Image 1 (cartoon, rainbow, N blue to C red):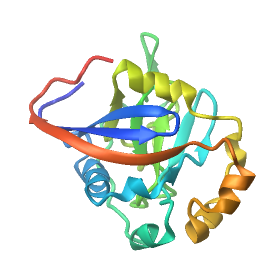
Image 2 (cartoon, helix red, strand yellow):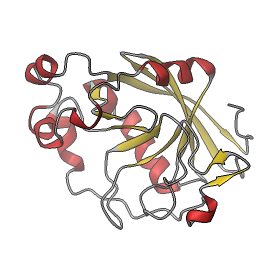
Image 3 (cartoon, rainbow, N blue to C red):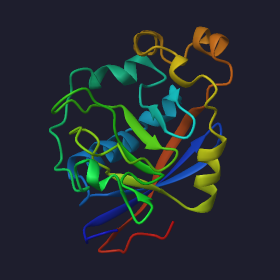
Length: 204
């Protein structure tokens, strides 16, 4: 649910179909701001691999398809936004609704203040996500039926065995990556459409 603030609508194209993202400044101002800055810089037009997509869980992405585009984010870390989801194991699910909803977007991370340019999107609702890790603060959500249909089409067959991060940092979306992981999906562009204030969250 939205609690005032700015909502920015971003339309992304992927090899699996279109994805619309509502970035909520009041959910996580630093996290939403970094994503919108990347969108404004044309970052996602570098062909960003959906590198770690695990069926019925998450898809991780964010390393640029071009190492030159990726490089400015090496060590360029964000402070954590305050977690607004209810913490602890008792809040994993309420009335059958998982804490970290399907289509929520957060950062991947590895400790406090570790967020940079890698993201996760929930392919299904998850109880454990958002329950303690400081980087798992949702800053946006996927919106619209077409977007959810795309989430269902993203290739998850490689699971945890997609391209290693080190390889992607070195080579980006290289011919070697394409040859070894031919079914991997990619984000090919993201464009900010509009910005509205105090708009209620769009219904899923």
